[in-house]
Image (cartoon, rainbow, N blue to C red; front, side, top):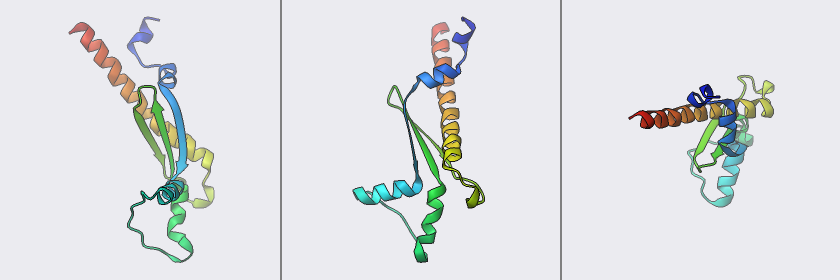
Length: 117
């Protein structure tokens, strides 16, 4: 409808996404070590206990059709025993989608402004 042309819709948000990717900060650390790009200031604890929290940081990267990248992060439950990968992914994606919604709203406003300017 004509009214929908004046607002961002859920379908517009979904249509802007080319791909979505999920991983933990722990996975990212392992990948960076494997490819030689890791940089950190670590204070190791016995049995790598200092690295355990990285397993609860979920990162969602949305690649948009125009090549732009948006990152959403969820740091997991306060109580590690309540951590859920699926819930962490859902929350990380929700954060990324909120950013995408803002970008699309800005883009729509720019088009509307240039049409009347």
